Structure formats: C-alpha cells, structure tokens
Length: 348
Image (cartoon, rainbow, N blue to C red; front, side):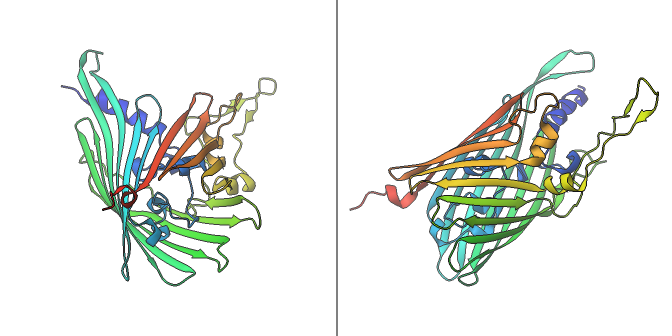
C-alpha cells in the first residue's frame, strides 16, 4: 500500500493552518491555535488582561489566580471544511501554593480518502493533533505574577505519528490602580520526542510575545496591543517560487517588492478592544495585521484580518462567541462556555 499521497494531502491541509508560524517551517500547530472564543474575537493574541478568565491562562499562565478556582471552560472552533478545534479546561487554587489549571485540546482535520499514485481509492483515514496542557500561576506581590505551562503534544497523520514536550514561561505586571497590565510570554520551549519519519525532525514554533492593556479612565473601553514573535525581527515572507515579472515595454526585470520597516513592525502587531457594557455584556473587536498581510486576496482584501465577538452572562454561565475573517474564502466561528462547578452544587 502506498501512503505517500495521503501524507501529502494532510501536509497541504496543515500548511493552510500554518500562517501564524514563520514561513510554515514548524510542526505541532495545535500549540499556537486559539483555544478560546473570546481570544479569537480579540484577534488571536491576547496575553495581558487579568480578569478571572481561565482561557487566558492557556496563552499566559501568569494570568492564573485564585479567582479561577473551580472554573470549567469549554470552547469549540469550527474552522475550514471538516476541521474542528475543541478545548476543555479546569482550574484549582491552593492557598499558599498557587493556581493550577489543566487543559485538553483536540484538533481534528477530518476524514480523508486515501488514494495511490494511480488515483485508486484505498480507503479512508483521519488526522488529528492532541495537546495536554498543565498550567501553574503564582502571585509574587500585588503587582507581579509568574507562571508556567507544561505541554505534551501528539500528532497523528494517518500512519504517521509525532510527539513533543514544551513549556511556556510567563510574567505579568499590573499597576496599583489596576488599569494597566503588561504580559510577557516565552512560548513553546521544547523538544520533539519522536518524528513522523526517521529521516526528519520536526521543530516547535518557539515565540516571544509581549502584551500591553490599558483600561481607559471613566470609560467602558479596554485597549490591548500585542507584539508577537519578537524573537525574529523580519516576519515578511517571500515566495521562493516567485521569479518576478518582466516589463513588457522595456524588457527589464521588475524587482520583487520587499517589506519596508513600517510593514515589518506591523507584522508583529495585533490590536483589540473590549467594550465592557456592564458585568453581563461585552463587545469585542480585533485586528491582526499579519493575517491580513499574508491571507488577503490582492484584488479583494475585504475584511481579512478582522475579528469580532461578544460575551454574555446568563444566570450562572458565561457565553462567548467569536468570528475570525481570513479572506473572501471564508471565516471561522468559535463558541465558549464558562461555569463554576460549585455554583451548580445542590445546597443542603
């Protein structure tokens, strides 16, 4: 049985989700996919808001604190075609020790038809990534917190399997009046345990992210700027297959336009805002310049890079919805549910 065709098909699908990784050179994309409806609505990068949201601890474990204890979070993202991303998280706080969180993430690529090089149908196969995340956050004092995530990642693409372990290291600062927060995360520091093939070694998407959040005085508006992948200055991508063009009048070669300094800076930037219209209703808006730069169609950019959503508190539950626009080809939808287990216990 020839499995080469099936492996290529999965590789193509994976590359469609790899835009957030530099040049598509890394594996284990589940480590960088957004696992929260709220975060998806806010542009996909959100590491500097300290407000009792267990999902934020997935990206910045220093945001985990005692107010997260007993929280159960469930999120699902409907991506493209049959691809879906589901996450379940739970947190527990122990006085004097810190806050612990556990998350299980499942990324399904759907089902594929397996064919050989002669296009003969051989059957079907599936592909998926699994990620177990164990997080820990601890308060240093009223202004500073630190945290860490330990990740075990397993990827299965038909008969090919690969695993890795990684850690995130994070710190958070919040001003005395609690209207300004800074988050810093070193993510995916790790090593592969085994590879899809013996002659190849996958790499993890190592990154350094910095987030700044400001709550405007006497206003419901909270603004956030996140600078991602600071470990690499130039995130611009040049297609190696692009051989340039020739001027039809002069016959001279038209040079390929390179990114200027302003564009290189913006490729690191993600901006978002939250309208906190009371405790029970929040509106969210995000913009990812890099997503727009890499995925927008030249002649019809549309809303590529934009995202939006809302948060509702209904009874003892918090619901979130996020929609992410990639380009004219489509958008993804994300839903989330938060509840505190103790709130549903029957009182004697």
